Image 1 (cartoon, rainbow, N blue to C red):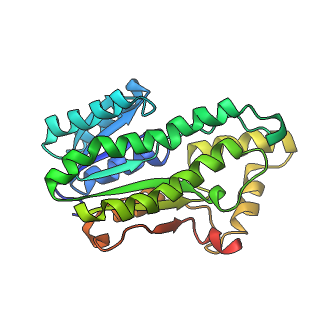
Image 2 (image 1 turned 30 degrees about the vertical axis):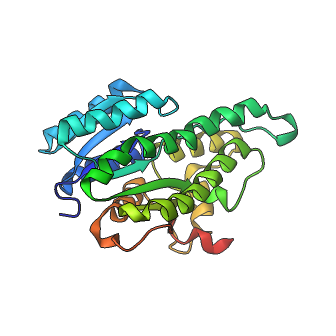
Image 3 (image 1 turned 90 degrees about the horizontal axis):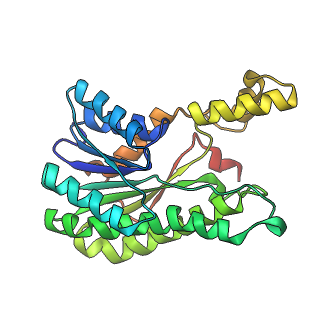
Length: 260
């Protein structure tokens, strides 16, 4: 199995890629620690993992708070003895507003979660990863960091900063055999995008099917990647199959990056 015996922490677990990634990680042999502000949801996903024969621990945490990050790492070690992998997927998109009307305090609030939350989680797991002889970290980024959308600055800029931090930390943490990579997600089919398209279709008078076809036409594979399949690629970056990969940005977007 891809992650047999490894303990993996995933932050910002939600109903899309996060929950599916956690369930797949457990099927691949990992002990999974699910962290999110929504206690009920992560407990529900942890229960599904355990019912499927896996091992999971749900922890209520706000990665914007250093103490919460430390608690996640401590509870992971207490439950499973080590930490080998971390997926930083927690983020705060902020308000989608044109820059000349934007409240920069909203941008700062996004930075506190998307960037500094990830950095705090990395610092929190470092002692355990060093003790384990190494580890792997994946920061979940977005195509918008390369191809910005007007009004999305509070989201785009924080993800771009996370992207830059990936390279910086890969350089600094390599001496501990800790790898840090970036997963660049584009359009991703799941509950969030389906809900967005349903709302937009209602406003524009088109159908969801027409919107999906329009987006898919701009992706070389001809489809919107499914969130569960994107999650599998993230797990590969955590695995020993990528033991020599660090500081890299893996495009998990069906080739959407080719349209830049």
